[in-house]
Amino acid sequence: MCSSKLDPLTLPMCIVFAKNQPQLHPASWRKALNYTQPRVYTVTKGVKPGPINAMVITKPVANRTAQGGVRSGLYRGMVGLLPDPCMFRVEEAYAEFNLEDKPLVTTMNMSPDKPLVESAFGLVQEGSVLSYQQPVLTSRYITLHDAPSTPPLPLEGHYLAPSKCMFVCTEEELLHLQSLNTPLDMAQKIEEATREQSSCPDWHQLRRSRVTASRFREICHVRGLSSAESLAERIIRGSRQTAEMRRGAEMESEVTVEYSKLKNVNYSPCGLIIHSNAPWLGASPDGVVFDPTDSPQFGLVEIKCPNVKNIFDCKYMQMDNGFLTLKKGHAYYYQVQGQLLVSGMQWCDFMV
Image 1 (cartoon, helix red, strand yellow):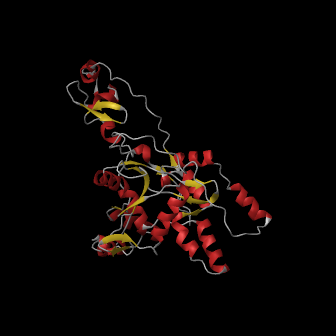
Image 2: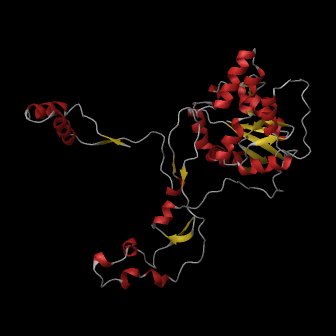
C-alpha cells in the first residue's frame, strides 16, 4: 500500500508555491502540491516476507475471522534429474546475439561450475530464483523415535456417556442438531484433513457451529438465559484473532522443535476433533505427541506463547508444592480437559 503525505518540513514551501500561482485552479493547486512532495510508502504491520505461491488475496469483511481468498494455483512440481551441465552454457550459446535478441535465460548467470542446493523442486543452482523463492519445504512432523502410526482421533472405543439433562427442542433446533451428526470414520477423516487449522477454510467452517474447547469455561459459568443467548451469539459470530493468538501461530513451529528436543518426543500436528457421541463439541489441540517413556505413549500437547519476560508473569500459572502448575480455574485448564474429553487421550503436555 502506498500513499502520498505532506511532510511538515516542506509544508511552508508548498504554501509559497501555491501563493505564487494565483492563476491556477484550486484543483491544479492540489495537483501541483502533490508533485512537489516526496512520495511516502507505508507497509502494513505484521506482514512478513514469504514465498509467492503462499500469498492469499482476500477482500476484508467486517466481523469475520478468516476468508478463503484467492490462493495460488501452483501445481505440485514433478521433481526429476537436472539436465546435463553443458546445457547451462546458455551465455556461450548466445554470445553472438544482440542483447535485445537474447532469451531471458541468458540473464540468469547460469553456469555448470556453480554448486547445487536443495529446493522445493529438487536440486537447483545456488543463487537462482528457485533457490530462495522455493526453499525446501519444512515438515511439521518431528520424528526422534521409531514409533507406531499415530492413532486416528477421536480414539476408537472411546465413548461419552449420554447427558443426564433432557431438552425439548423445536423442530428447527432438532434439525440443526441432526445436521451436526458425525460418524466416527467421518470424524477421523475431518481431523486428518484440518491439521493446518487456521490456514484451512474447512477448519473455520466446521468449528463455527460447534462449542470448542476454548469456550468450555464460559459454557460452565453461564448464568441465566440472557447470558446463554449472548454466549451463543458470540460463538456463532466467531472471534477475531488476538495479538496473542497471532504470536502463537507465528512461533508455533519454532516452539514445537524446542519442545520435542526438550522432552525427547515425536510430534505431529492435529486437526479439529469431533466426537460422534457429542457432535456439537469440538477441540483442536496443537499436536499429538509420542513419548516412549510414558504410558500410554501417545498424548496431546497444547502450546501457549505469552508475551511476558518471565514465565512467573503468566497469570494462568502458579506454584504448587515447588512445581509450576496451571490454575484449575483458568480457561486454559478447561480447554485442556475438553481436549482430553473429546479425543479420548489420557494426558496432555501444557507447553509455555
